[in-house]
Image 1 (cartoon, rainbow, N blue to C red):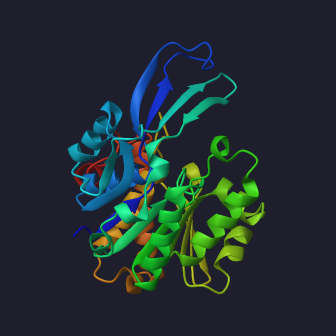
Image 2: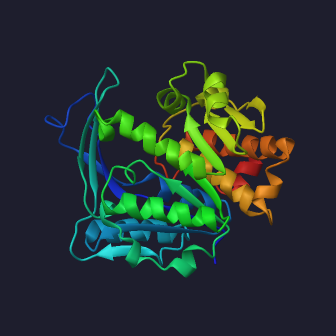
Length: 317
């Protein structure tokens, strides 16, 4: 049994290394492991915790590369499905001088995970389940599986973590659909992590505190809104406070939010009953402060998984 199970996408990011270009013009690409929930499992394991990943890749060279990447940081990949009949999902990204991204998404295996392929006994033996959703809620078999697992985990009173991970390039003109399904998932979650931009999109509130109040009204959830270098706004049972981050020189913020989630879940997983522990607001703030530090340290290096620090590196910073 692992303390934390993460479900969602695992894919290849081909990132154009040519400066200020489009995918039409770009010629040089770097292959990187991608997928927010996979980054979360990697953070938990690199900090010394135990985590497993559920998802689907193709049984092809890219799928093996992704499995090996998680295996190297000791993530349990025994529930990763490698499909002989579909290809690993690929994303191609280039960055232009004005900050705009040129983006092409070739979806494959990650959207095809079926409920009947899962080891349910193994899934529900975990203390916590984290649902990361950059692609998982886009529709198809994966969405059905994802929502069903979340519903059953809620019924079994397993601690549920949810990060909507909005990507405009993926949702396009389906914004209302994204908001609706995200709200449905948040209703079931014990911990919700959002960026300030995601909070504005989902709640329609320009003010962060007003947005959090609209989500937390009448329920008993931890809500964390990441504010970049300003830190994280944390809310629980009507209490609300910004927990400051540490000052660093940022090189690459890719994966910082995922590392924050992984660090927070790692700390919660060390506590016997996370639901009880999270009634203590001072304890929550202490955990968020640690997670802020991990997220900030990720920004000081290149690469989402390779930049995640070990517990020793965090403590020695």
